[in-house]
Length: 87
Image (cartoon, rainbow, N blue to C red; front, side):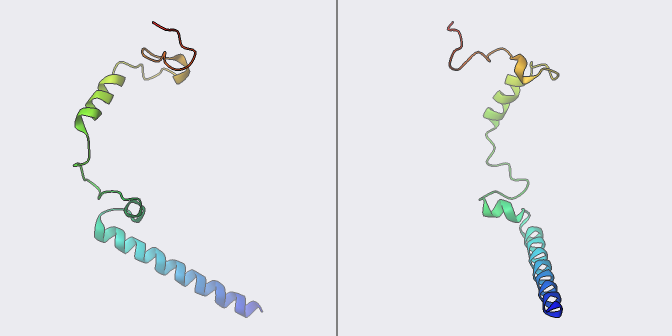
């Protein structure tokens, strides 16, 4: 019984090693992680899907926020949602 368990464990290790080696090989060949490919991601360094105007607006929006501020402290424009006072 012990010998069968050892053989099964060794076989499982070999299969796991082969799977990891294949994923590493695919990652090297495509320039992207195997997980990104399965999620429909784009290759590393691809900037064609970036909305530069939206990114610039987001950067401008947070530029004046104090880096030491806690989210609980609130910030200008934070008064929205149910129960917030109307202006």
